[in-house]
Amino acid sequence: MGYCADGNGEVFLKDKINVKELKTKLDNLNSSIDYNIENKIIVIEEYNFSWNEDRTYDFLNTLKPYVEKGLIEYRSIDDDRHWRYVYNPKLDKWEEEIAYTSYGFEGYTDNELIEELKKRSYSIKKVKNKLKI
Image 1 (cartoon, helix red, strand yellow):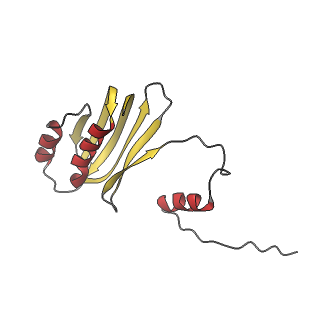
Image 2 (cartoon, rainbow, N blue to C red):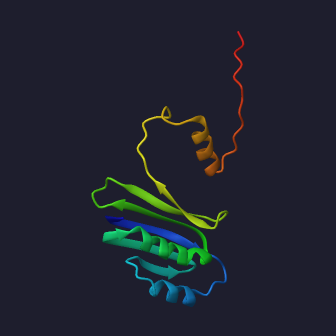
Image 3 (cartoon, rainbow, N blue to C red):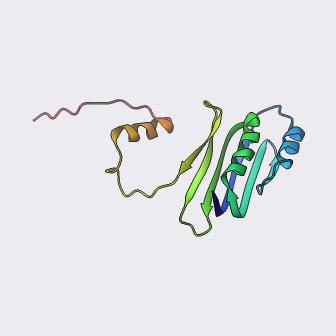
């Protein structure tokens, strides 16, 4: 799918990687993503009138063996769509998260809220409310 989109983010690299090898792999991709590697951090920027999800995933998957953690945020030029890619080291994959506007918790199930809290590393304990009079 193509959008007019802007993206930026940072990727933190693992220790003792071959940066020259990584640069060669990234430079050989057909990508509109600009990057700069400095001190184990890749700063990423993309300003594109024809953003392409497949090319973005090619770039992210090329990074995958070298990544410790990372986040790249995108927004459409007309600002009606926001999404991001977050590297999940436990699953060794990039996950897409799409932003939604929410005006309260009524639209979420308990399980959805619990999963979100777990994802943010909170510990959850269910407690039954007892009303004493």
